[in-house]
Amino acid sequence: MSHTRPRWVQFLQRRRHWFDAAKEILKTIHSAREGGLVSQGLAAITSAGIVVDTLYPGESAWEVFRNMGMVSSDLRVGGFLCEVLMASEVPRAVVHQGLTSIGIVWLKPNGEPLVGAIYGGAKFDYGPFLPIKDSEEELYETVREVVWNKGDELMLSTLRSAESTYRGAGRFILEDIEPLGHLVGKRRPEWYAKRLAKYRPGPRTVLLRGPTGVGKSVLARHASKLRNPGGAQTLKIDSNVLKGCSHGELLGLVRALQPTVLLLDDLDLTCRENGERFLALLETLRDPHCLVFITMMTAPGEREELPKPGDWHFPGIRPGRVENVWTLYLPDPEEREEILRLYATEFDLDLPDDLMEQLVEATDLLSGAYLRRVADELATHGIGDWRDEVNQVLYTADIPKEKGEEDGDGKTPEKNTGYDAGPPVEVVG
Image (cartoon, rainbow, N blue to C red):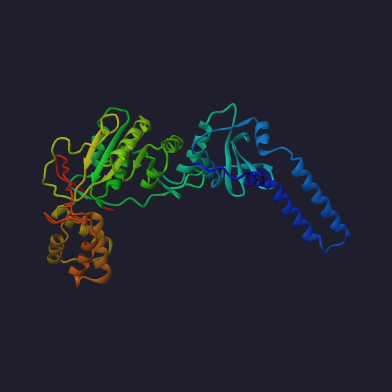
């Protein structure tokens, strides 16, 4: 519901530049009050100039951009793109200086204007302004060059997920993804990469489902690198961005950054409203040159239980939105031993064979992420009270309840009934 401001407030807001001018005059007079006649005379002249500029302003920033042959663009994430350029080394020039705002133009290599924006102090105020004769593509190409020079794997997160900001300014942040972890399991990333390579060219979306800590995102990154040996540009979009931004903003981000691999993290497809909304969005995101991975968390469960037809269906899921569903599971005893030995080496931890056997049994139903924590705790505090260290991890782990045991809401937790026609895979990292 919109609220109309009182007329006196609107009047003061429209005359804000008067108060800014008065502030400048007072500062000028204050600095000259103890000076001589010359200083006071110069202060009077300066104050008169401020009054003239306020009552009869010169060219506005809008007029400057118009005279340069630039027009305002309605890019949904134009503010964010300008912020990317502001933090870069792309050449720029100040083309307008006002009391409370400045006009900035970023330049092409030949010195011609690329894009402009109006800033109020350090805050994006309006824009972007683009040359009339040029399209948005040159802006996109420059932004891509700036962004992907930082690295080939980036994560987009949000600073203010619940607050709407003007054209994405002050809302999004790009940062490096954590280093790619190890993968342990009977199926290696090569198996998935080869499977992807067999499909005909065209857009493809893969849903990765599994309990927390099994490394769904890590598997997607491994498979992407193997599928694109020349270098994949992976953009991981944080779940808070997916929840907080509009379709138009997400489309604008993907179009501007143009990743070859798009990783959408932690979608809740079991919620009909959210599931259908995101799956419908996938249709507009699909690009023949972009592979899309979606990760979805499931409750831990027993891998032996085969799924029934339709168990993997969600509202809105169909070919053209999602082509493949891969399910990851908790590690079996053989895989748990391999994972523990891997992290024992990383943490310089000596685990005798008899202790390893007991650890493998005690850590049943722990995912790779929790097994790493077990190894870290043992390396830090020693193996003398190893059961206590394991229990500290078990108490906080997301593991299935015993059969018939109920959660706080009185319901028995659902099982993860996924099955992937073959040995389970465990990803750790």
